[in-house]
Length: 94
Image: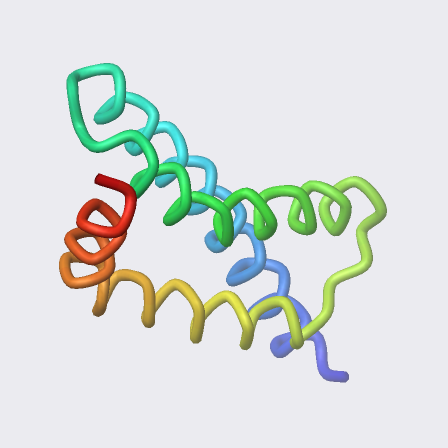
């Protein structure tokens, strides 16, 4: 792998990791301000997984393109369908 693609891999991995932490913090703040508990916690689960895997990756310095590709796909899908899923989860649990 070239140095440039390795730099991209490291940079994008860190972006996914820090975005996952940011998303979890924002959802927890929303819950404390009265947002729907179960729907927000369920939507945080993939981000918790990305944060845990990202922490492992950053600590061991073992970056992989699968983390980046899965992160981009899952984060994009969750952000695109978030309103619909949030409403459906809230209706399911209430």
